[in-house]
Length: 168
Image 1 (spheres, rainbow, N blue to C red):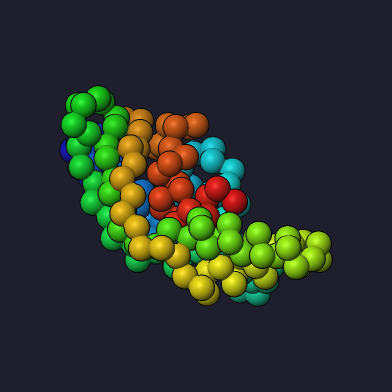
Image 2: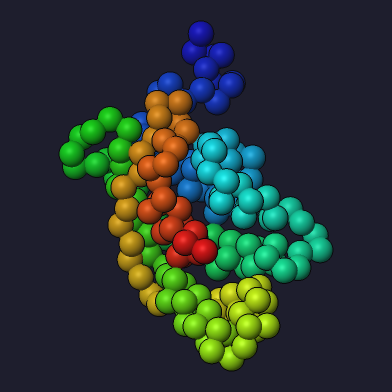
């Protein structure tokens, strides 16, 4: 029976820390299928990561690829949650938080013209080029025993993983 588990990738013997690490590493490697299998029904992440394989990315697909490029090397540490709640881990990310850069670029676009604001990809790319703020983000992540994320609980995790892009 152990051979069956070993060859199928069964997560029976993995800790929550192992499961969380696999999910983050799948995102970082651009392994869309593994990440989305674990992320479950999160439509924002599915839409964003669905563009990573696109060869002729333009518009928001280009933005999604640039966000991934900007965040895929973010350093992280996954630890057991101090509260010892089953399925919970604490993840600390160190990297850039682009939320304020996106916000500032959006405000500038609105002030300039409606057409500039309507060109969302352009001002988002500008924000990414300007860079984010160096940040350490600590979030709680909740994982089912099968290694998938608990729906509607991990928004803070997705925010940190994408350097603040998830809010947009």
